[in-house]
Image (tube, rainbow, N blue to C red; front, side, top):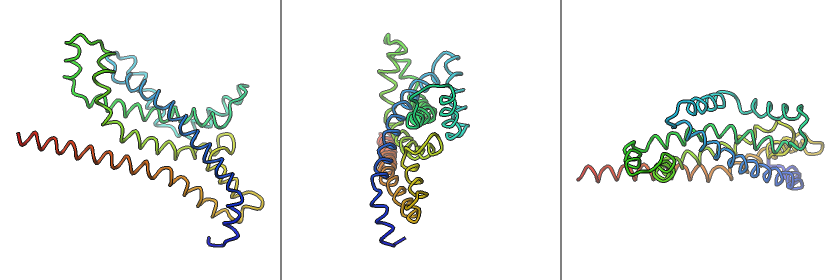
Length: 235
């Protein structure tokens, strides 16, 4: 592990790790955008007063959460590939698969945030003439932000780590794929251990600050709620 010549091999192939990191970040950001859109849509559907949207949301969430991401990614990539669609790259597959998968989890976060707002808030808004849409976007959703942000950040961390599941779906584009290609490559396999260490360090550098932020954010909100309850109790 401490042999200089092996670390020199890693350094000489640093561009491969850089390219993998860039692909991973792009995949994560684009996948997150899709997940947020799906999460908000299905989160709102799950709290709808109408039964059909709630059923559709429940089917989506339960199916996605109870099947492996790897299976979903492989099915997506090969079904599109064999259908004759051109231009659907491994990177695009990763983006869509991650977006659909984490959209189910974010929808549950949104649902929990909405249900945490007292019903009296909505009833008061309706009594003032607000429509259901106005009530949701002007009254309810703004109050859910402090509830949903910490778990949302945790979902971002999980999404970044889950980019590694794209390893088998269509080729070497993400960081794990590039790292594995380095580890088994001719002339680089001798430095496989060092390559995997670098890959792990890169993931840690990206994910650890986000995990720490989410933890501190959550603790701060809990402490604020405790302080508020104590003040109310003192009154």
